[in-house]
Length: 383
Image (cartoon, rainbow, N blue to C red; front, side, top):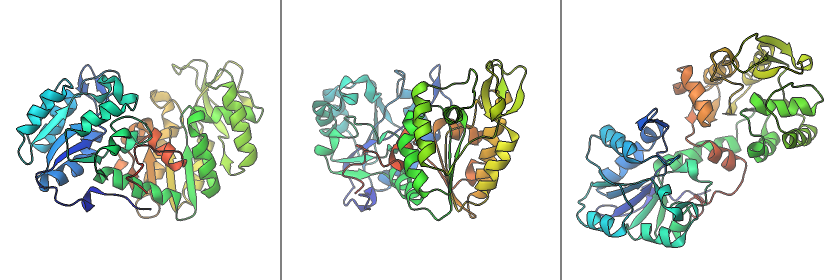
């Protein structure tokens, strides 16, 4: 495998670099709740600044949010001025670019304000490419998207991987070629998004530990009642096929249940004792002990997806327990990689995220890459 890294690019001084970052930070009322993704791309920005480049930064944000708060936070972190352009007007941007000196930075508005972005429109990609001399992709987290600023644009500019994207690939490849035994921990809710991942990891893992609402599908597939727990009929069928083929899938042996998701009248029950009006909301203490016994054997660990409804104080114990044990086993004893927005959020609750060898910025992209599915954003950059 070869990565076409920006470190291999020559003569960056004075060159205009279009940097596609993923600064899709969580926001509330226009305020940034976490700047983790902005901090993660700082090494690439600083590398380009050291090499006297002129930088045009592009990103997307969800829910129609403006990119301006991200631009302001990046400017504060760098201690430098960044010109924010709030409307995609090629003429206006080109005039600003013409005035740029080495180490100047321009930040463009949310790419998804342009309909051509998500359509992978060649015309929009060409208009972006016309602003710069070099394209750098540092947005691993959306590498599985076939969008104009990730896919089509590479037809019009020399393309390189940013330092963050490069590190993502190098670290996730340690999961694909693991030091055995590999223990995989998969949680969350949507089984359809994790089929390829489970199939791929099942071939390499000593055990795959399944938790969260994802486990409900498997529990139901074994003929046990799951009450009013989150599940779908298609998911049960998929789980039955996976469980039949892969005997190293380990499921919860006990669960935390309540009659309502608000957490009143909580009980710990064996999986074969769930009542028809129960909702499964977390893994139980015997399951934590079982999962930990496998984590202790690992030389490589990958974790994606919480073990339960951890956002509720009463049902965070399973997820946080697994987070602590993964962190304890990582960094030295084993190589540990963690990804997914909710997983990282839970990990940060333990204040042990620095013990993990690699905390991926990608959720869906991590699943797609490890599952061996197409990554349009990486094509031509990672070979």
